[in-house]
Image (cartoon, rainbow, N blue to C red; front, side, top):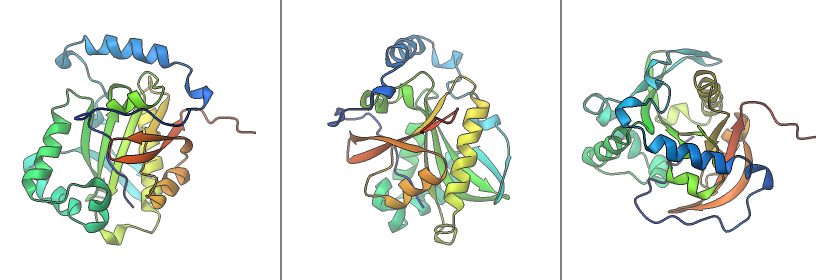
Length: 235
């Protein structure tokens, strides 16, 4: 199971061609104001994701899971191998030499704390790759009414033996819980899987995300999916 990465903002953005549900419009103006305020704070003086590297291990139904921030020299070979898996490459589009993987990781790490690339370590075994990012400070915010501290997640399950047996949804639910627990200012976890990636959309749904709109992003049409801190009354 894999989830495609977010837009990087290196090319012009296009807005959604379908109206976004009215309930998402609330708080958009506040998000813009807080984003502008954040941008005036020097990167060294802010921790935009509340110390992902220090969140520590968490118990899940499938074992003890730990998000470990990527170190390029240590991890590039492993992440590159995963990126060259045809199933992963179809959506991440990062198949190629280690230099290409290193460039992608370097861009994530250098992005003034807005994104933290991590290895997902399950019972001591690195088995997945994650990007935890500030969706409200990402170009994605130009495609939906972002709220302050919206936090985005991307992930891929590295080995074929770990796919197709429910690991993805269980780990995704655990990481979303972790984000909401460790980031008290964050009220929503956001994702934008490719509409063609039906298994990913199903995984998000199983992990407690709801689909709220379809949006156009550079290179893909995506389902905007949200996990709320407080479950919504859908009756």
